[in-house]
Length: 205
Ligand SMILES: [Zn+2]
Image 1 (cartoon, helix red, strand yellow):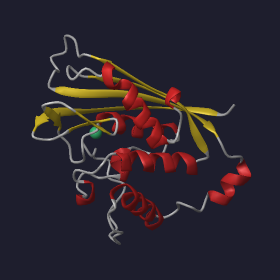
Image 2 (tube, helix red, strand yellow; image 1 turned 180 degrees about the horizontal axis):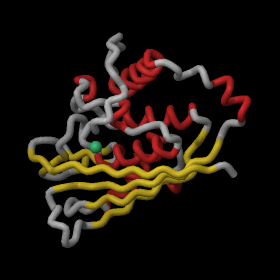
Image 3 (spheres, rainbow, N blue to C red; image 1 turned 180 degrees about the vertical axis):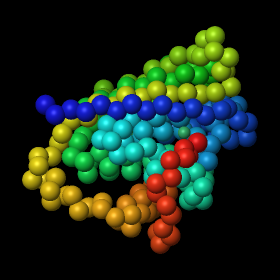
Image 4 (cartoon, rainbow, N blue to C red; image 1 turned 45 degrees about the vertical axis):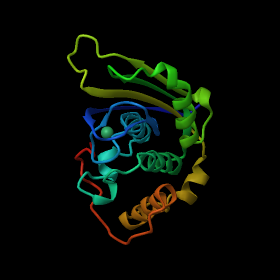
């Protein structure tokens, strides 16, 4: 079996006045997570794990924080693009494991719903997604949410299939088209023809 592995990590500070988005869900809590996008620390870590598994860069390469299109963006967009990159590289997800590190809120009561949501976004089964949580004991980081993610992937396409797909994302313009498609699917935002630099390594957080 041809397998690869990817790791992702992310952190965001808690902030009042914004909704708390974790795992593609809005969680009932007095504070949300600060970020250029919706600050979904779990989806960002999984996105980087998937991109890392096929050595396709990181979330900041595709979604520069200076790009106004990603202001308050639903992080499901980032996850969907990572999934596209994974599929174009000829791989599919075996399983995802994650650990959230945050003082509040308690994740255990909503972990099942969150796993179902993430599995749905990734088009996999709930038993392929693990979401665990710990408190940042003794670290003095109660004002921050962190997430670690690992993705195991396996080859889904043989060499011939890959050759026929190799031209799909070759230019920045084509990548932009994919991003715009995802944006219009997830957000209902009309397509724009703006091209922005994609190789900015600054993190979107
Ligand atoms: Zn982030």
